[in-house]
View (spheres, rainbow, N blue to C red):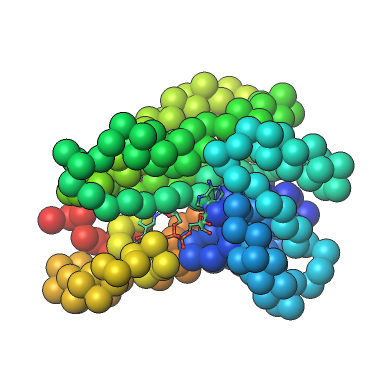
Length: 249
Ligand code: NAI
């Protein structure tokens, strides 16, 4: 795929990994629409990226992936502005920490709603165009918890395992339409999502992660960029782990 002038949409792009992905795709020559439910963060991030990459390749739009109407609205307005999306990065996600027996059904549902159904919605709306046109790439951001589980975050791990299964299924369904679907599984990445666990995680990473540090958002963004710029329709259904070696045991 020739990246120049291609259009990417990144969800959850107001900060952390999503913002780094937007930056790295812009640097690779794509036009990027940043979306998030956090409007203030989105405006800040879009202004920062416009200062780095110019006004023209950067759009931003409020889009809460929990809300089908907002996904449809962005599909329509972005379509009018730039045409169909060539690259979709499903990155928006939430984390919640509590023991399994203390997670009410509603809490479980809330995490699945954003982390899994949010991606499902975007794949349906933006992926449909890709399938119809016979070209496109989707990258989902899961987590190594999809493979390893996550003590005190069963709902999070289940949502990410669902996202991996979604990826593998869509990779198979969409391959004949020249749409590649891959998933990135980050390990412990130093973003706002770490919250109060950051101090503990810094020590854990120095001790237990072979790379000797927490991941940076840019580490994940680089993996996404590789999958997006790869000029082959054969790279699909890949599960790319970005964890400094920590899931190797
Ligand atoms: P973050 O909290 O910095 O960023 C998440 C972004 O998603 C925020 O900007 C937030 O406003 C947005 N968001 C949340 N719910 C949304 C919704 N319903 N609609 C639209 N936007 C929404 O966290 P981070 O670390 O950048 O996370 C990005 C992705 O990476 C998430 O899917 C997360 O699960 C995944 N991940 C993060 C890891 C880490 O250690 N930080 C490890 C493995 C995966």
